[in-house]
Image (cartoon, rainbow over all chains, first blue to last red; front, side, top):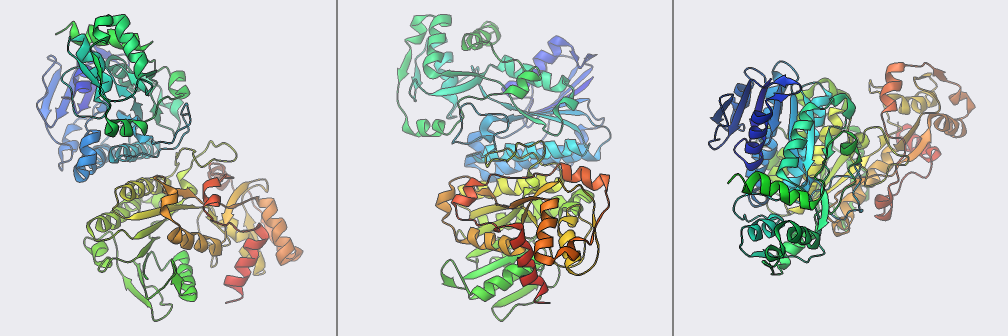
Length: 319
Length: 319
């Protein structure tokens, strides 16, 4: 089993690599080689990993990554939401151009490897029904969401034509993200758990009634591996799936924090209304009915308490 | 009022030009200039028309068409369904690449002209609910439909960002198409009306129970002009609209033919089952609930009888 991961140096790329090395098999076969590519250095997770710095947007790079063609490709590389909105050209170049460079290289290469593409619930845009069904149309309200939608469309058509065997998974917001606070509008969803657990205050820019859908990094990695392993015949032509999430209000997140981390942690949250962030978040989906993904065996976190415990186990205990 | 039409030499482009010249105004202003561009020669419809041969896929051509920037652009240019399926590279180059060349030239030019883009119900793919609602997801089963979907996504995002003011209209099958039979799988929907009205037999490759959605060329031109004139604030971020059609079975088409053209015409239809065509057509949508377009004032043909009469008035009487 030969695996390629693009965007391997990112938080999810590194956790995916670590999990694959730990488990040692994929699709029932021993993993012999994991190629890691990113535009920055990727730390190695062991002897089966081969990391290289490269930009799939540059001519020839994608084709070179396919000599030989891996059995499974996890295409995680991309420009994040805020950057794609601030720098339109870069977002298009990386999220559409880079994806197309990889897909076209696959089209011209031998074989039909499984390609797992990490899309996002940013392909959806308000107004929404509650819950949002699997057959709801994509009306993104950001360039990032638009670019993910285009990549999904290409993945489905390239799969239909037999150029490769693609599965797109729309990830919910990932929380609790480890590390330092970032500038993303969604950052507080992780911050209000992560900072209090570290004993520092966290700003809450929105009302406690705000509802949102979450998956822990551990569960997101589980989705990727399951997407690499499922029988794609079960998908038919509809290759892109909304992943299940734990739908909770911010208030319910804080209640879970009090249960798992103690009331002292929950007391470190400081209400600090930010109308700009509140307006952005108001356009985001709250809750999905992800019947297809559930039937296909994608298993969400059991509760938001479980999300917090996964963070403590995977990211705090190991520090 | 300065208008640009891409794909102007096609059937719809020529009818649109003729209609604009006849009406003489658009958005309440006299039309002073209509630029016509196509990769083949476009016959002129009068002194306000300026035709040129050009390919918007070639570097610089789109930018040149925007000096000065027209007030309204009808973007009709594209590779048709059968060709996009047979020649993947060409379909991507024209339907995605050409559209993006035009959109990017608009992004870099002054002003925010109205752009009317002719999409297609090929963005939808079976299985469907009946009728298909406005918020049903796009799951095209052809490369043509995929390419139209990508162009729609770009149109919505470029409009949201203020690069131009776009409206995408998903046209149903156009019947009765004038001219000679073509090789399209949908060709028989027009052929079974057009050939008998000309006194010649027509093959019917599918069962009379097959249901499909139609618009006359006259109505399709009406949709384009209405899309150029509506207040785009009413659309919000959802810039792409499914156009209403007359949903009839093939049997109902033939009954209408008997009423409008006489029983002798209807007797010229020869049942000639073609499993290949029947299988393709089985994946196509049958009926839409186009509430948004109806509320926005897009008016379909009154009946399939009216579709046939429009053909006789517009294409047979004028021959």
